[in-house]
Length: 519
Image (cartoon, rainbow, N blue to C red):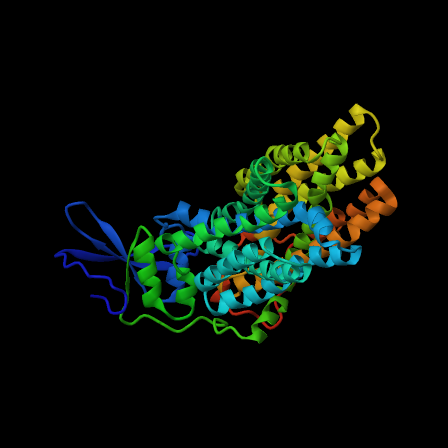
């Protein structure tokens, strides 16, 4: 029995040790080949935390339940999008029921975003300090309690409190869910798997309108928002009920904190490999694994500052353009159809499914070929062009103009989901090694919320004042994102960032390492 792992050594008579070279890192990995009736089967010997990172990152260790794990992690993203969309749709009814002033409408609308901003910062810190699994389970509780609380809120004050709590759960969930996906994936193709969060977002958005469509037939109109918001607790309960069967801590996080025995046990339980820990293994935690509040400053050290600026700018700009246009689509559809709530629900469902889901999956399909940087850059170029064209067209008059505007909005949603929408999360998650992934991702998603708050507060004012001229202001978001990417050409899909946990950071790194491929 290997102490502390629950693994039993097999007493085979013939055993030979060989050294294999990891093609991704160039490091030699110790293996023991066990002879038997089924042929040779390698047992990997862990001698340091880096061996765990190499096994997972190279694809040698593949999770047995990779698909369920991916779906559970994406389940958190589904809940995020469902909660955002349900509240957005119900805001007019909430305003009528509680008799809200324009100021209170802004408070109700921004409470969830403020909570998400704080949740992202706190969640990023906690997932690096406590581990991915514990934080993931904790934020599911936020979703359950907050969804039920919002649905039953007797007054606006209670609603604001529970919307704020819901935002904290959403903010915590993004960095932990994407960190799970990244650390259960091989380096090759990691960006594509992390990018799956975007089509899942649109699946959830479409599902929200599908739930609304069903409830519309059986629930009084004045209570529709309560039912659709409260039902957000259901997917969270489903995720919580299946987590124990499939989910476990990230083995790379456990190894980085010096717990090789736990990492070996996780690999042996959940991966298609046999693992033992060498008796003379180096169990020293990697540098920076002891996370403190001061650790949050690491994203601004010479090695990471330009990546942080890039990830933050892409995230904020894509969020600003999405919330200005994407969340205004139901209102636009309602204005075009002018036939009441049911056509608006159906139109929003079809629109999100037709353009958002397909765009998100198109980005995933092209991720390996084009890379993170190219997807985000080309996506911003198209969304910028669409905003300029919409501003030039002005208010549509006539069927042809209305159809043209609708198609342009569809093109916008498709290329947003294909490019910056998905790649903002990819930049935040894959630009940092395991020891900094939570903090880096949390900071990026916090800046994302800043973009959404500004957009939700400012775009309605601009739209009222300038009508379709407001698109000129929205165009500033993709323009700023595009300029940032042209200046900072870092592409995490082309680098082995996990190796940086063992590569000492220079006090003053060379220009090319700190400001990658600056044009």
